[in-house]
Length: 263
Image (cartoon, rainbow, N blue to C red):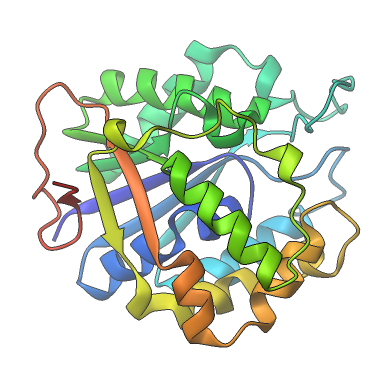
């Protein structure tokens, strides 16, 4: 058994970007941990835990995740405006990268992490918190001496294909949200994970994020459409997950049977 830690920006990112991989790793007997930089809340959190963290724990239970940790930061939001910090914590994008990396490295050391999943240099589609996850993830992996750092991404051509499928299925995705420089060229991708066999779990984990599914955010219509799809169609759209190996020496079989080179 090995330990896989997935470092994400917000609750629900764990499903959309790595849900199938986490479910598959857990099913094959590996210890899986999710660390989120933010609790997905823009303002101050009342007594207790942010509501979206409860949804994350429900999602994690569906995926078979053993532990969920919040790194302690607030959501930075996406768009031109960066709002002041809430009174109870700093926004992730304003956090000292070294301090954030040390917090994450402490968890990685405690878990004796074999594989860290983080984000590509673009942060996928460029969200400021996602870019900071990339920066902090790389620092933390070095501090903790993690054996393998895999950065989640999508092949640019697959993004184009998914947008075409979304059009055919009348899933309302804003095409302008996918910038020309988003994600990664196929030539940069080193690993892909086939998670079609875990489509049902991935879809159920997505549905656990009720506030995002029923809300008014720009991704809410997409999430509603995705959880209503027949499982085979959901698996066709979201049944593969891709990574770039950011370690100097590739150890692609560190999680046997899961992470396979794309070649």
